[in-house]
Structures are given as structure tokens and as C-alpha cells.
Length: 403
Image (cartoon, rainbow, N blue to C red; front, side, top):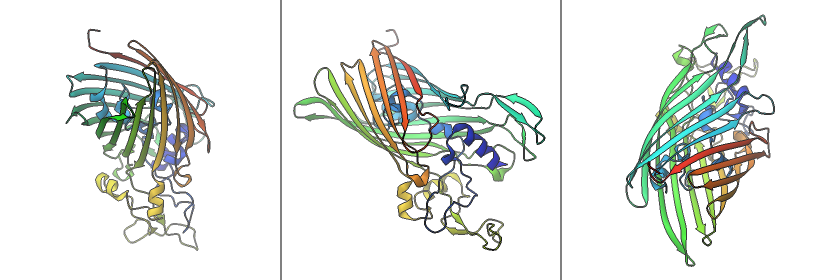
């Protein structure tokens, strides 16, 4: 039943690499060719805004903006504005359907110079789905959806260093209470937390006083497993993720500025092992404990914190496979007169871990308190649900509540 639900969502999202069942034997023996990591609620990992989306989905150490909640909330206390809010919209699988989308609302407010509070809502609509029984009779039409609500607090520990914590509630209603393989289902819920830090220092390079260097880290979605039934054995990990990044900004003159950024991402959930196969039957070998026997790798059926630790050394292919679990992203942003921005980026994931590889382009406009961003994704290796789709973000930033 769990596998059915996961594959159902995977088909809708178009992110098949995230959803290969952790209980299935990978399609390799000995020499690895593909071994993707699985999680539930992967909508939490979708880059929600067009600014970072235009830079390849980089954001751990980029200049703070209203959408920092997703990328690194510790950046908020370094924001130049006192308060802001934004709304983002991303069509999903637009070439196939027109009613699947991701919406993102976010808000922040600084408290003096050293503190900030912030919150966001991520809502993923899976459109209209028709459920049928085994005979093909229509049971009903439903609108599966998922959302996450979070709120956080950030504080400066010094003039250059800050930290943040975020709490999150996650709701995932995929089957609307229908029976799947004879088992009743329910909406999955979970709670999670993010822990982030950010460091920024000003530089003076060749007399260019407007230069800066920043570093950031965000461990997001540290939380309980999620289940879509009353069976305690069918719980899945949520996408706990480590994001590390660096960014270098430089003001060429009063009108022209550049920012170059790099992110590394790694899912902190267990890697699927290689299970032993009975040569005569082609089926998995079941051990005395009732579990499939493992040929290489480690048992993924562990609790959340051990799973996070284990994720750094449990790949059946050893160190080389662990390195392939890191996704790297590069992005560049150019601003003219702080009013017109042009962006580009590249996202790279190993072919063994999902093979998501794409270029992105983006534009940004700023006028007084108003901002508008667009991004466009160009896949290079496989179909992408955002391929050739325009995303946008609308933002408002204020110097003070009264302005």
C-alpha cells in the first residue's frame, strides 16, 4: 500500500527519482548504475521562488530576500529592508495538465537590528483526480493536495554571524481516504524543524568597497516520519536536507553589480541497500527476522536521527557513491542600478541519483517597494515538470511598517 501511494504521487509530481521504492532491489548488481534515494512529501524540496529559480535553485548564501525562509532563514537579519512579503506561483507539468501548481506565500519582519521573525505557506495542488474501483467504476472526483506551514526566528550573534530556527507542520492528503490495495488510507501529517546559520563579511578588493563574501548552512525538515495509513510499519522519511553554500558579491560601480553563488545539497536519509536475491526464484531472500537480507549497504529501517547520521556512510557503493549523493548548483546574478536584474544558473545531480540536470534563466525588476521576478528552466538530461515553464514571484519590501 505504501509503495502504491508513493508511486501515485511520483507520477503526479514528475519526480520519479525521488520515489523509487526503498524496498525494491536497485537495477544493478555489483557495479552500480542507479540507486536513487526515496522520501515522502518531496514538494518540500521544490524551489518555490523565481529569483533562486533563475539561478539554478541556489540560495544558501545569496543576498537575503523575502524568500529566504526556504533557502536559509538565518539571512533575514541581514536584510536591508525592515519588512517584506511575497507570493510565488509555479505551474507543474504544464505540458500535460493545467491544474497542478505550487504556490508559496512568505513574510518577514525585523525586530531592531539583531532579530527577525518570519513565516511561510507552501501549498501544492495536484489538480482534479478521478478515483475508480477495480472494475473501473468511478468512485468520485477529488482534489489531492499537500501543504506546509512554518514560522521561525532569526538572531544575529555578532555583526557577521547569525542563526535561525524554524518549526513546520506538514500535511499531505493524496488519496482522500480511499482504499488502496484493500487498506484504508488517511492524510499524512508530520512536524519538522530547520536549523540554519549564516556568515557575511565585507571585502575591499581593488578599491571596490561594495564587495562581500558570505557562507550559509541550512539543515531543513528535521522531523518525524510520515504515514498514510494506521500501519506503523509503513512510515516514510520526509526529505531532511543539508544545504551548504557560498556567495561572492561585487559592485563594479554605482550602477553595475554581480553575485556568484555555489550550493551543495545532500539528503540526510538512508540510501537504499542492495538486497540479496535468490537465483532460483528471482525473489528477495528473507532472513530469520522477517526482513530482506542485505548484500551491500545498511538497513534503511531506522529512526530519524540515526538515519541522518547513517546517510553519510551507508551507500552500498562506498565513498564514491556517497559523493554522488551531493547535488551541486551554481548561479550568477547581475543588477543594473539595483532596478533590473539578469540571472542564470545550472543544477547538477548524478545520473545514479536521479539525473536532474538543467540550466535556468531569470529576470528581476525592482521599483520602490515593489519587485517582480521571472524564471525559466531548460532541462539537459531528462524531462522536467518545470521544463519550458515560466514561474514568477511578486514581492513587497518596506523600510518600516509606516512606509
